[in-house]
Image (cartoon, rainbow, N blue to C red; front, top):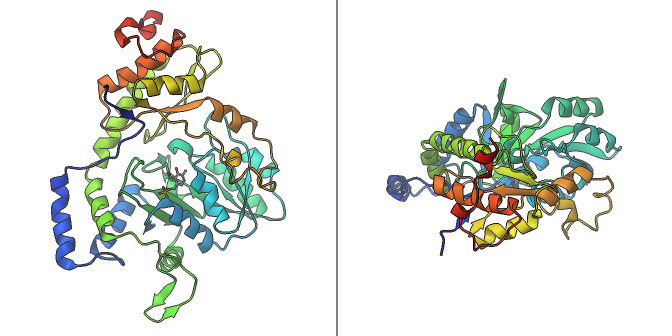
Length: 386
Ligand SMILES: Cc1ncc(COP(=O)(O)O)c(C=O)c1O
């Protein structure tokens, strides 16, 4: 039986390196509630990302729900259907109406022109996603928001450590949220964060994160429990020592895939994000197998690629009867969702693993989805064509 290759594998330091952190927690008996590790990690993470006002959360979904609460958004919010379900769920949990609009087929991010066309008197905000870590067209989105008096909350769950010419992409909009889930580039097992534009907003977010407590006896707003525990925060501090190395490894795997896959007819490579969080490819009509046939061929070879993002959120059972949410055409998003597949990419992926993934795609290019042929029996299409 071949070793399973998963789409991702969590960044984990040596277990022994975490023991002293645990000993400290056991000694202090400080388990949560803004303890010393929480304070240290919150500051260290903000410094690492190059942002000023960061609030840690227990996951990205709670962070997103809280960001929408903090901005007191009401009515309709324009968002992308091409994302993880949590993007839209956070709106519904706030009793907001997600309004799905189409994406730019080159970046997979929400199309600013589609946003403008979908604005109604009930629209209060825009919730774009920096999909796969590729920054949205933040300037165009800001212009639309300014013209129509809308708030912008970025779902930056994929955009850990992504910068543009002026600094962190997390500084854009009224707020950004991060996910530090196990599947992400940087994880604290579970975790998340809100990046606020100023100290006052962060203070408000911090109160909402802790049930709305202002002091021991005063609760001014109906907050939530969004606190990150000391174990997660301590782990985050340790992870910060390893993230740069992990990003370099991701970059080299991305480069390897690009080299190996660039000339396979019907396989389209997508733009690379700075953090190489994902490696999406499009399986076009010129490729002999459909996307789902390629997905099955991978599975036969113990390669667990994922169809992110399929189905579109708007096509999920939880959304498909919501007429208010599904009133705009989504041809690009639908086209991409039918063709996309994300290849395994993570710091522990070996050269042999990459070759195994590539061999399945090359075999498919010959019209075979069978798992019987060996990689060596497959001609090297890439070097043949060069
Ligand atoms: C785009 C997007 N938004 C939100 C989330 C939710 O983050 P979490 O899993 O930390 O709650 C995810 C997580 O996978 C995501 O991919």
